[in-house]
Image (cartoon, rainbow, N blue to C red):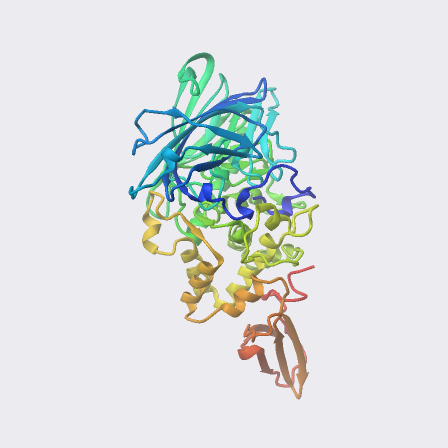
Length: 568
């Protein structure tokens, strides 16, 4: 989601939330989705949709019922099931269902009995439609965005991270169940273009995908996602787009298309942004490893809302700004942040929203790393100072499950708390200081791609669900030391460590007080004249002979997240 420096005060969403904040009901945990086949017709004139979704799933445990998520604003016309063993055979039969409180409950024990089948499969087809929720404050409070271009043409986008993909299509809306592939077919009135996830398959004039038959005046677009994808990352972008495109050669040696879907009136500005996109691509590939979705594309679509990290089709609505608060940065920070999510959200996905920081903290810290790349160390420290704003009232990686809204807003229901963005970014900044640059950047790449061999993979095998404990384990492996003291203080509880300092008999004495009560062996930077000295603090205490000097400055560049540093 968006960098907080670009977010005005927002209200807590009033719509449905992702259900992952509470235990997954057994009627959802009993199956695993491996393919979605989404067919949808979008009518800008009536602001309605009609759709059909085919869900291919593996039955993990026998159950009498199966639960899908779908906003109750939409109407379910029918639910069909089949038990073919394969998803390309017929035999669909209607099954009883109810649809209320955002859930489609399907009663079909004959299809959901696992028996002795090691890989029992089931196919569910849901026909639905209606007027989907219109996003009140996109992208934070989501749904469909119905807008107009300068010429008066329809300009439509979906964005639903906070509330879930079930705002507009039936799915299993849990972060830890990504389909391995998705087919997306969309029919729109002629003259409009659909930009969506994955690779472009083709378009048919005068054809409707939902009914599967000719329909004059409509165009049918087909997209195919070949790699695992989270449900909220699936998006529609619809407008009379033009495209700016180029083949790009990855650091892995693969060539894939980079395309920007731009409004006709903004083509000239789009060409400038496009060059920035390519520069950011090279920088992030060198930092984190190859762009993960080379099998499909990297796409950006101009949207009537600010932005979102939809996999392989980033939503961009920053109006071509390459500055912040009047200062020219020379790069578009909105795109930079959303683009970082291709690694930190889409490649590496939190297993549940209590580890949401893995998405937002890494993307926020990527802003500082890119600033350093283009503007040097001064630009890096400037970016970190500008990220000194968060509430610091709750753990940014609690062990208990949370919803997206709980993690995003914390205990400030009127505005984003910032902890999973900027406190987490400061945690990574501090980890870099602790490990040193060489070790930190090697570990950072392994956090994206744990096995270097996965950097060559294009089939989606590199995509994974990650937890805070895994991030910690990678950091520990890089150093060969136990970092429990670091992760427990910074991620599992909210209070910051306190650094005390005093001079006695010409010696600078440093002492950490940890909120956990355990030793906190964090080294501290001290400036003496023009020299920066790294002072070790084994067992939380350090000392530096000053040699009669009185100009010692403790942590002058704010290397460490501590009380008084990095939190207002």
